[in-house]
Amino acid sequence: IEVEAQRDRGAVELSRTTTRLSLALRAANVGVWEYDLVHGNMLFDQRMFEIYGIDDETFSGTFEELTARVHPDDRDAVLRAATEAQFSSDVQNVAFRITVPSGETRFIESYAVGMRTEAARVTSTIGVNMDVTDHVLAEHATELALREKSTLLQELYHRTKNNMQVIQSMLALRSAAGASETEREVFDEIGERIQSMALVHQMLYQSNEHFIDSFYGDF
Image 1 (cartoon, one colour):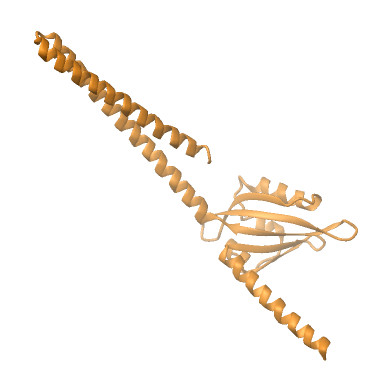
Image 2: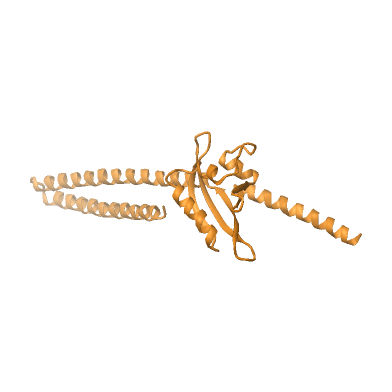
C-alpha cells in the first residue's frame, strides 16, 4: 500500500512539474521537438505546431516538411546545425526565418543536442525553438528610428553651420565697410561668439554621431 501511495504521489508531482514546465515554455514562446533518427520522424509539442503554423492532424512528421518552411537563405545553416547535432556532443544554436502558411515571416532561434545511447550512438536529437519575432522587429524599429535621427541631425547640423558662416561673413563685410572702431569691436565680439557657438554645435553633433555609430555596431 505504501509503495502504491508513493507511486501516486510521484505521479501527481510529475504532473505538476510537467504543467509548470509547459506554462513556462508557453510564456517564453518556446516549442519543444524531438527528431527520431532511427525512424526518421519528428515529434512536436503543441507550441511547435503553433509557431510553424502546422496542422497537427496533417503533419507528416518528416524533417523535410519542417525545413520546407525555412527561408531559402537560411536553410543551409539549419541543415548544418542539424547534422552537427548528430555527431557532436555540443549544443547547436542557429537563428533563422520561417514562412508560415499566412505568408508571415517569423524569426526563430533554435537549440538542439544529440541524445546518445550507452554505446555512444546518437539515436535522436531534441531541441527547443523560440519565436523571437517580436524582439527582432523591435530591434529593427529602434535601428530605423536611430538612422532617421542621424539623417535629421546631419541636415540640421549642416544648415546651422551654413547659417553661422553666412552671418560671420556678413559681419566681416560690415566691419570692413567703413565701420567705426567701436562698431568693429562689437562686430568682432559677435563674430567670436558665433565661432564659439559653431564649435560647441560641432562637438554636440559629433558626440551624437559617435553614439549612433556605436549603437549600430551591435547589429
